[in-house]
Length: 196
Length: 372
Image (cartoon, chains in turn blue, red):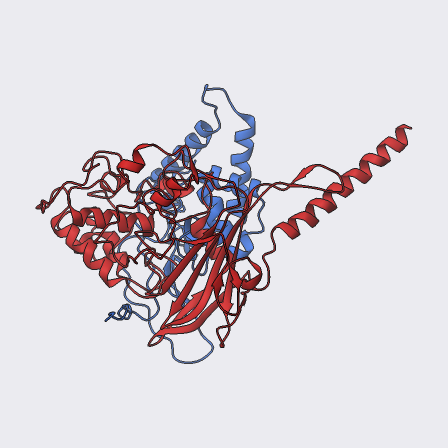
């Protein structure tokens, strides 16, 4: 496992170094600085708390860095969230903090790695900014769900969000198809009444 | 002298800032009442003003069964640049209205207007850029007047349109989610294909053309289009397709999905385009066929291997993510993600039939060729 983590860290470091070079192969100090800034913001902003799966360590659950920021694991599938009795308790999470249940239904944290098929690999910087600024997926889709702290993250400047995105492009791509969110009370969709 | 000059510059800068803010405020504030937008000659009687023309796209956007009326007003003597058949450029001063009724009662009228560069009277400089303003007016109980809805929030759950289902009046942010795109005007449903005089008889929910409507033919005859291809007169654009069902299906997806899923706007990064081509090879050229049919979907259907989740799976309705999502109204995975709370049953049937029978890889139902 240690070897795997060491290898993952090496790949991440290599990716970060590669991304900090210009198309001509020259070192790009500005890009390097931006990526470092993004890394700082991601770590200080605790993105991994919810977006990195956990493993059990000597002191309880800890982030599994071999799956850094890859979102809720596609498998094994979780059983349905238990129903809470009426009262003040409203929100639950799984032990990994990657699946959350509340009045909005069940949400699963997204894969933020640059994997093309299951992560943000096909996103552009503009897609990322549009998503955070509007609180809607790609700026046009469904609303981002709790516990994603959109109002807080929206305090970042455009440059800070661009730095976060630049850093996310440098972390290892991990293939992990996160399940879609589950609505609170599954019921048949309403259909339009037939017209005479 | 130098000091005076500097002081003058500071004053001028302050004036510019003040004027810009002031002009922007004026420029981007729609009237409080619908009757002040220029739609009516006589608002109380509901008489439409001179120069305001009705129109009707052949593939209308599904709006939960709302009856809709649409009007456009072009500034006098100005024309639409039709060089790009998919994205016309409108002159400053262009205004559009769309009225929504449910059960015969008017509920809301949406309004967009293209505003332009303004010259500050104070400093004589250009301030402000071309922009579109968006507004929604909510009709009163007496159906006499409509008042501007809250810009930031709209009016969620405003009126019941089916048992237990209530219609939302959109916020401006909701309007922009669909209307705004990269480097194009914020108009939907008013282009060469949508206004073609060769209308699709199988288009779901198509309405008859209102009297005096502006369609492509009328726009050409009245010289309201510039840079329009001469071929549009003899051969009005239609969706290039193998058969009538495919034409209607591709047209529906164009009218209902391509404002987000196209190859020009930021969402183009996901590589899915429903923009219907009308001057290309019917089978291989259509963006929908290239980017959706047999292409793996990022949408994860529960209990289905990701390898078997396709955007449109030939012959397989249940593994076609587009259809699965069209059939949802859960507020999470549904398509479209906003603006609809009722499944468009007619469209789901049309697309299902097309997927079962008409896609490449499935048994093709041969019909007359509509490739122009």
